[in-house]
Length: 399
Image (cartoon, rainbow, N blue to C red; front, side):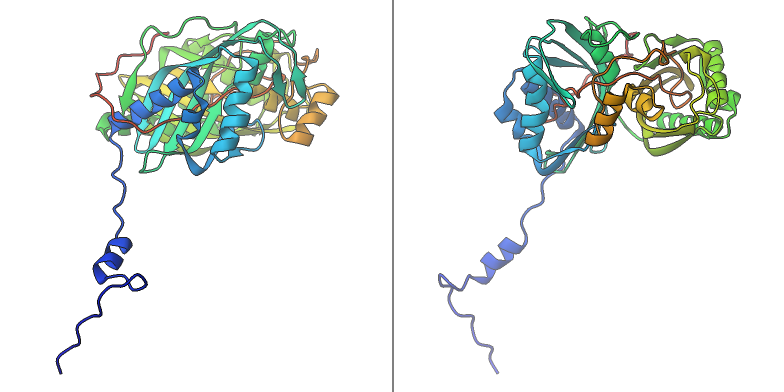
């Protein structure tokens, strides 16, 4: 039997070719590393110029934006723009973010950003609005973005110390880092290549975490350079040298004998390793460097850590976390601030109690966070897909 020819296409009966074309929509072409870097830069440029229409367009429909240990994430382009970016810009009309370091691995982009601004507007915090102080802030933040293959930002995480911001605004009499005025002289851009060096750096990092969880200071700092610099951004100053690092970690183990680290992710890019995870422990001992008397309370805080390796040795460690989350769990915040934090799942601006005296800078994932009161989150600009010029070799970061 001769098969019947298909009927002609009508308005209600699409032609077979049309149906096939509809079912085989072209997949987006993944961005190149150069395009991802350009996208990251374009996202911050949109925020810095206060082009919020352009800023809102860089997010995927169900994108999320989270400030580490500062409450529930924002969901969707409108909320991320109106509540997040504009919320900070209202308090700091001249607020900007200057990228100091850019690391790329797959669809993950990790930056270290210098956020600066003058508080000339009303700054809305979880415990209420703060009138303009006319003071300047300048602090480093870890800023990570995950892209989809269409180049839209689907997930954002920003980590920084709220106590530092509150201190710089004069909202509490507590030791903190002074406002940073100038950024790094060099601003490295590094893309992961899957090299043996990268694999070796990641293995060394994991070995240090293993040493920490075994409470073996020598193993935890086994690859540390003699002149290693620990930059714990919730502490008023860096800790320099392996000897000082060993001293800090030993004291921390005495204050938190069950301290442990649970890694959520860790990936390399060139000489760098980026890690996120949870630090937890029970404060059953004193910690003289923080003038902390044992509280008997458990603590669990999240962190973002970026390590730089030179010749297989850990040369720099940058640790980002929200110190107020640590202080609140130890009961070091005043009652009203602690109550507000529990009620809104966010830290609040508060004066530092006498018991929470000057914290000491200590190794990251190798030491306990410094306790501080809280403040409201800063902005977390994202990315916009765009073509980019070829990259130049990455210089080393300036300290």
